[in-house]
Image 1: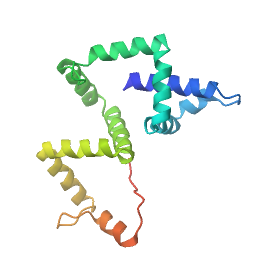
Image 2 (image 1 turned 90 degrees about the horizontal axis):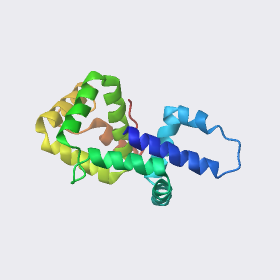
Image 3 (image 1 turned 90 degrees about the vertical axis):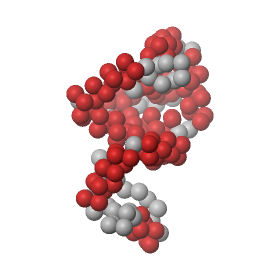
Length: 167
């Protein structure tokens, strides 16, 4: 996650350096909301992502970081078990970080149907977690006793397609 943040920061800096405007890049990137919006824009735009990848290939530091990241990953692209346990320990020790990461994943899944489907598939593989989430939604009044989401029914009746959520 940290590697991606650094790489995306580099892309943003390279992108904004190409414009002859007096923009306070550092000031923009210091704001988490702006930074996340920039990252999501790049991630969800094929042309921007391709340009970013080309920029990374031409940058020695970016390539070094990618190599380090690949070493952390197994051959199948998944984290090695020791690294996965280390990350789980970090999240357990730092609930704020975990909550932020989960919030970012939720935001990304709203914009990326592939990620949303993968998250839904993962949830079905963990019935206890799914049941706990459903209970929390019932407790918060988001779901009726029949198991239907109240927000969805209200959206369908009003024709409003916007999604509202809290972090």
